[in-house]
Length: 236
Image 1 (cartoon, one colour):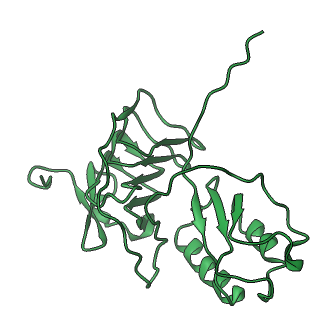
Image 2 (image 1 turned 90 degrees about the vertical axis):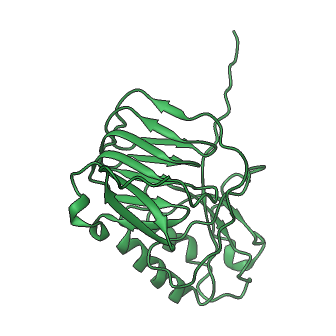
């Protein structure tokens, strides 16, 4: 019998909590309120390098994240021999992986610098069907083209631009590897969340004139612009 194995890469967020943890968690709660469901099914690596073994609340911190549906696939930057971490469950240590661009959660006042466009985009990933709720389509090295609808609860993640030739009801995230010139296009804008180069917009913040219309999204002065896709609106 032949044993077959295939590799598959995933994008993961890295969270770097700071003391005091109580205030950091309160800030996380506010971000999650503005972008409901952002962490749903999203793999997260926890970086403890800004904390130490005497940080107040560290012993219960993993459970606090679990209650917020934050799914940890890795922990780095800390020492599992710290007394406060003895009750923690440690995921299998991850090896390899390449850093991607910084991700900015909604409404953060501290601006994170992003690197300029790096490298050459690879061939686009073309999806010849609708993307159902719960599915995540990712192409960190190029564009994603969907020849159908993207359902609520689904997400599209691209290193380049996102093109959806149908209604966009889920989440579209473009330019994840530090490419601020990436764009999002859809035949019908009904998105739950939009993001380009780490800057996010949730459904409640989208302009009403674009809802239900063919639209494009681009980044201008660190703010997302959502405009109807009509003659004269497409920029070179």
